[in-house]
Length: 226
Length: 307
Image (cartoon, rainbow over all chains, first blue to last red; front, side):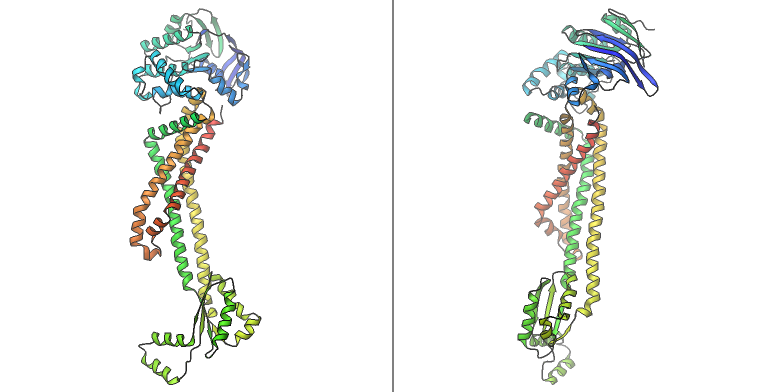
């Protein structure tokens, strides 16, 4: 599904990723671990085409993501749900509208929106917070809302970039459980984290990055960094 | 298509209403711009009224020799009517001139007695001419100096034309009128440009504050129109609110100006506001919508160019 072919990303003189080659198949749950600055976020930005690689190619299925036109990129992004550490919710919209915006953007009908949004809100346990604005929600609620927004369009892939970074252990565990549930329904999940407890609990594929390079790729791995 | 438009308008409306202080600030800035534009229309109207007033005071009189036949004078008048520069001509006969003179000097016993002793009317008839524009008096005066059929006959009965005596005043007034008009226009243009730049930058700043949201919208797969649309709708709503606010603000201002400044300005601005209300309303609303929409469009385009 995703294939990195010898990808290097440099910012001025600093390398963020060095000659990374990896492939992720559909339906996988992949944790990408590493210390701060190891290149985890750069890797997700390259998949989303927020950044272009300095050299190498990133494929989604058989398409080079960075050669897509604006229109094709828009269509590609509709197949990917994104969850960030800092939530990146639309502050001027209620929880309901944050989710419905993603559906509206993809051209879904009002009937679909009215049917699907309450369902997803229920899934992430935010039904009674539907008409609250992000600033009225707790950290855990914000992250659950971000997940709801990411899954509402039934994407092929979910990228969760340090989704538990700002959460307490209880909320973090809840977010990971939701991601596991989504994965069990067939959606590919890429999770970046440096939380050992979480990675060990998931017990799925773990890619370990250090200084921009892949140093381990374990099928049912644990968090091995010190 | 229709559902997209509905969603964009609703989203723009929500963002305008929910932005609270930011929306109020941009409405106030835009109100200043529309206020400046409308004030300049008022200034131009007052300036035009004053200039017309001055123009009205400038005229040219042809004095005929006493005893000149009315038929000959009428011939001169007929030939003058054909000139395109002439706005109006009024004829004063010798006897009217005499009675006007007597009325004017009703308290001057000595002058009236001297006039009675003359036994005949020493005053001639005259033609008072108003041109369309003060700069045209010179060409009208020259008409009599030129060598044409009329001048040959007419010259013998014309005593004097007072243009040459008034020439300096007329020339000065003409240049003041021209100067005031071009200065007024230049000042208006500069002020309007400054206010437009201020409005544009305010909206740009507001959109800059939303640049993270714009990137999130793009990341969830929103198309360019869907990201851009609500911001433009918001900008237009700012423009509409600001123009309505300006329209309301101008009501007490024009009433006060009408009551207290009509003599000074030369025009009752409240009457002017009332009689031109529809036009002014369209100008204010149009500038508001245009400024809000265009500013938002350009400000957001910057963030949409990036992938």
